[in-house]
Length: 214
Image 1 (cartoon, helix red, strand yellow):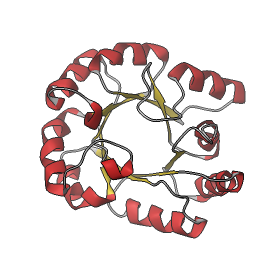
Image 2: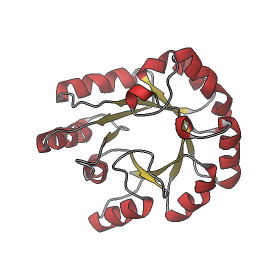
Image 3: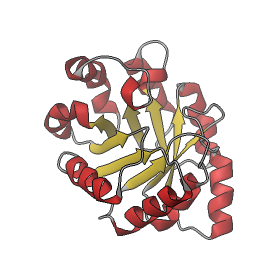
């Protein structure tokens, strides 16, 4: 389990690293100004691995372009990051991105709750083009959390799982205990509803005796 600080401003990098983040996620769709310059500024301030994410509006972000526009926006930052988050709708560009020596987080965010059979099917589809499948759902009932725990525990590793929204936010802390690779946190300004701060996540993991992956 590693803590990812999801940020929208390179000025937050130093505070995120000091708070104990293991990786930095730059939410390019939420950043102002030139994204490539923002990534370069981030790189100057930390040696932590950096994830570049340009999240679509359909999956909880602000980007509204097609796959071609997505690739043109992400292309300038690829040489400067360690991970690229790629939604399935943009996966046609995964092979080109992979040649530039980055790790691909193949992501799927949904406002619904797939069945456990559908979760395993989605994992296979994501793993077909990515290195780390990331599946984030919106639970409706406690039973949905139990299914996500079971899926996370049984799925091939590495895998990243999570939940959207405030209703079952505690699952963000529970899923890493059962094998989720990352827990996405904020460094002062949440980039998604329900995020814990880095400090809150660290304290919870230490209290629960969770082991961090290095």
